[in-house]
Image (cartoon, rainbow, N blue to C red; front, side, top):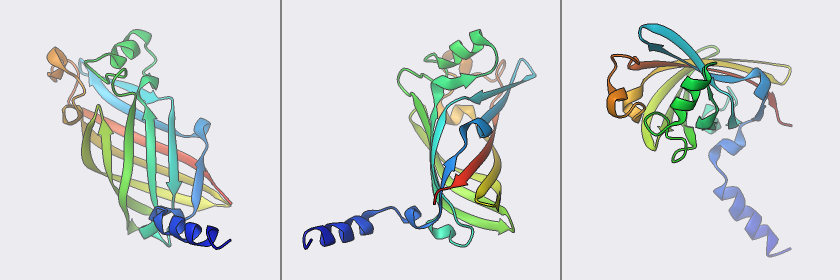
Length: 186
């Protein structure tokens, strides 16, 4: 017992700060990460069908709140098999080398009641950039509903290499919207 107590104390000190806020389990079928971009001037909607998220969030304790999201880049789905396969290739998401994108919050701040901004690091194709994700959250009966959106420039992450780096056919801006429904973990 004398050996276990110091080890548990050390473990508690090493746990991430977000372990103090309420933890949440994402409902995958009700949650999504969606994209919108233009191809030859026409809007294209897509989503990532697979992602996991470790979320700790408490509106009364934002200092200990945060999220770490891992997105399976191979799950890109634009409802067009040819385009989806091409998006997995080296010139776009390079799924063989970069099978996941990551979103890791650094801090969350309250903007107004129910409205927040997450300062985070987003990594796609091995390129990491600081981003701000504005989002809303409502919590009722142990269920959290979060909606957020931001716009990225695909060139910042090297998405679209060679002839596809041009914005002539595929637009520079990519709208990203996030919808998460999660249950509080007791």
